[in-house]
Image (cartoon, rainbow, N blue to C red; front, side, top):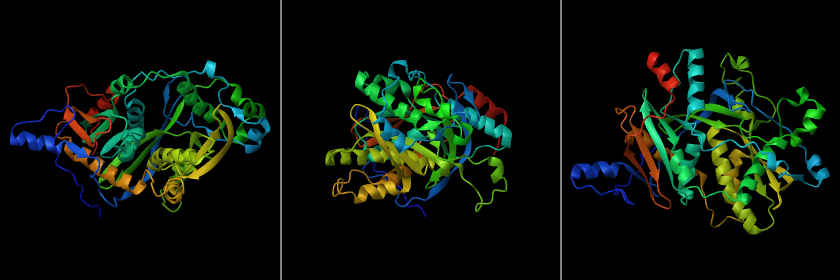
Length: 408
């Protein structure tokens, strides 16, 4: 049984006005969450299970299928023979998606409409959001330097949360050429480490020439997963970089026998790049980076991450597999982090459980279609919630579907 959350009563600060009356003051105190102390120890974690998937193609059109799913295929011999693969190749023809376009929760919500039309059942869950937002909250106790704002709204007895993109864009530093190039290296690694179909269905020419094609980040494959932490049930969607071997056909799991169920999530892989480790400082920095790798993979139920190690100049030298469940133990036992380990997965989950419970209970469920702002200011110790007059960010087609087809 999950423990009780500890919410410290502390007035709002950092520009949020104090209130005079006792009743108003008590309300204000309830709308802040202390990051240092809010914990639910030992929260029960529901095993993530995929309920849907969707794809964006190279034109950013949405499809309710696995058409953009990639398959891992990378040989160390090919890297060694080339003396290192140049991850900067093709940078000048990179087809980059405009990240100032606010897609809200659109792809996820439309995929839920498609799912519910096919099943005739409402997708159950307390909070519906992107995996990246839950990752941000999970990492917050150990990542205080950057502020963020989230928008949250109750609709049809479920709480929907998105990131406030205008806030994010307004506070981003103008990208320099180096940071843009390093971002490209990640996309290039994904290109040279994957093929579009199973190996047996790809021609030799197709496999060998994949690195010569222009890189694009328009296409994405996303998994929609039901999971939960403590008393909060979650529906989250996140991008999946590739599959290790195959994705099970849903028809093969039709009997729903838990002993025979072949979970698609067990076959997924996260792809990342990192500088080749050459010093103790490099190792410590890498272990801090593993926190986000673990958080992203753990939340969606992805069992492994393949990390490509590159030179300072962007040449891929090797790659290594990391099992998600073993990452916290690797860091805890590492001589580079101890005795000053900078993150603790168990403590982070305890905070996330308290945070999700706070969101579920603090934002008034009765006030449907009222958008609330969840705010974190850089290096502060509080998450705060306040009501806004912003319009709802939910996709009209999703709202129409749920409104015209009420389901329990």
